[in-house]
Length: 408
Picture 1 (cartoon, helix red, strand yellow):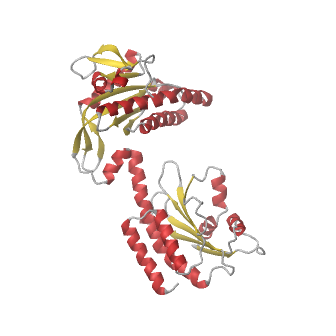
Picture 2: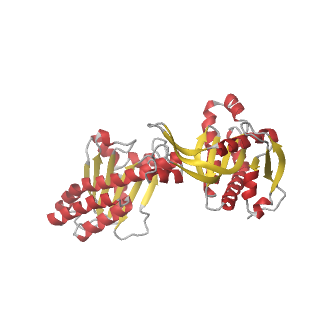
Picture 3: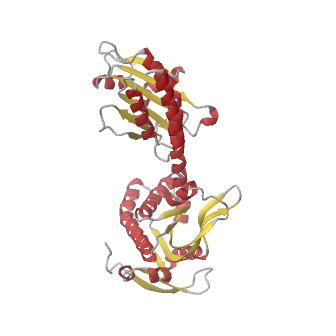
């Protein structure tokens, strides 16, 4: 590969970074370019720690002749005594960190004792030479545990990499690492806002809708749910049991809402505020009822799991309402909340709270019932008129008729 080719690849990396290519697209195109220019690489792995509620990081993989290999692997957290720990502690990367170096090259041959388990794996696939690189970030460039880019390069050429190929990979490693970091930061930003704000809300924020006081008036179905007896549970349960208890029930509630096309806007202790926004009010109602049905299907399984693990057992209760709200940014100049506000939100909360005294698992407003499709409306039965705190007139509320027709 000539100096001109090298400069061309580096220039392409800069433009690809500006264009916003994903990590997989960057790695694929980079490897294709250097192979076309004569670099005899056949397996490449790039590892990046990340900010994610479940995974510690991601591995991006390129194989010259094996398109059946997944291009992305998400790896779990180390330090928990599992297989991930063993693989990490016996890796060339961990060794480099321990000795304070950033480059490791090893010839792979049957007559040479393998230093790392990964080298035996590579030799079994016909690899003859291996290069590991670490590109550390400066202190101000560290994000969580994402403090460097790890990469490994191997070849099956009989004589291994040439010195010129090794020098070239070391030369192009930093610009590739910078491009991969940029792509990963974009993905991390998307993950964070969608995790903490919600999927659609996160997309709106990343699209630039962050101006304070800018809201959109929408008509939507509002979901407000809580857990029965939560106050008593917090006072009597072991503190160590509260977080797994809340996580399990939150997972059930949120997954049910998401599966039906809803958007979770806020978690308030044991409470969940969500919306079901569609062009058709009847469709919004259908989605909310589908989410309720999916949640109820999870409750028995969750109760059994908690009983087996000695965790508190309860059931969720839900208030459903349809009304107009303002959806957008509310707050101070340096702390905003992207949420819904308006009387309809308060009414949904009051309807949910009424489930306790009405001894129902779900209560539904008359506005929701009026907008529902005929087949959904047929499943709703009146439980009478109730005075809701902060609402001027008593409201007729409905619940689901468990004996009525079930919508598929």
